Length: 305
Ligand SMILES: NC(=O)CC[C@H](N)C(=O)O
Image (cartoon, rainbow, N blue to C red; front, side):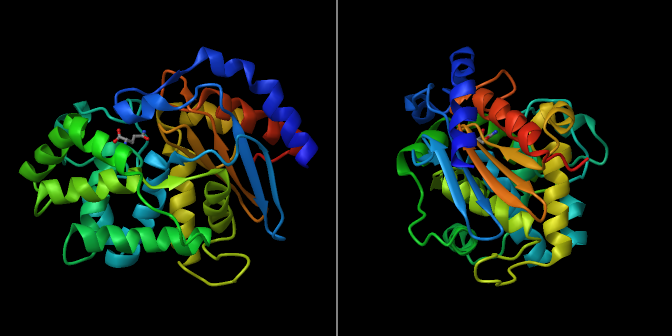
């Protein structure tokens, strides 16, 4: 397996030159666009790695999967889906346009920014800090990594420049989707996006979802199978933003990407995969990571369809 992963990384390194590192969050612009790494963690406890698997990056939109999980655990499915929809969108992850035109006005799904901000508002806690700590603790449990923390530079960089997210959040409060202190809600969201990880952490998140919401090594059941299934279904329909349909055909694995360059993938009953390559395609997905998953899926016949 290590040999296969090394080969796949080297086969796809060239394509990273065709992508661009995200710079709309200035601190993300410092990443090395040539980096490409992978970790596969399987059900038996084996961990395989290749390339720059241990370079640190921030979760960004990958965090939206676990924040959704926590919001459903806290409030139940019915309450959460009163505030956010279940439908994919053909628009960019940070698009604002449908918020006003759709009736009733609510974000289309929890994997786009507006939806994830609505979800962050539903996490329980006496203030933003407690809400975020509850979410961070859940990530620590799932990955088995107690050292997970926020990358302060990325967090402050996004907080300073996140006016589009801020605009969506204030609009959502106006139409009654968000309640309470908008800046505090945004702070939870900006921090969850800035949690720093490597490919191993991300593969463990995938493995946890692949194993229906249980951490395989400890067998601890963190969430019901039903909620784990909801999260994986969103990964299939919305996880790669407006490239999710094509990804389902070409790769066929539930996956969630982030603009930090990570992709988290969950192959049901088999393995979790964490990929990192900060050079992005025009839709905001890791250009090398996408190709790496495509080749791995083909080699090991991993498509769920
Ligand atoms: N697609 C992403 O990873 C987006 C997350 C990023 N923090 C943002 O809000 O723009």
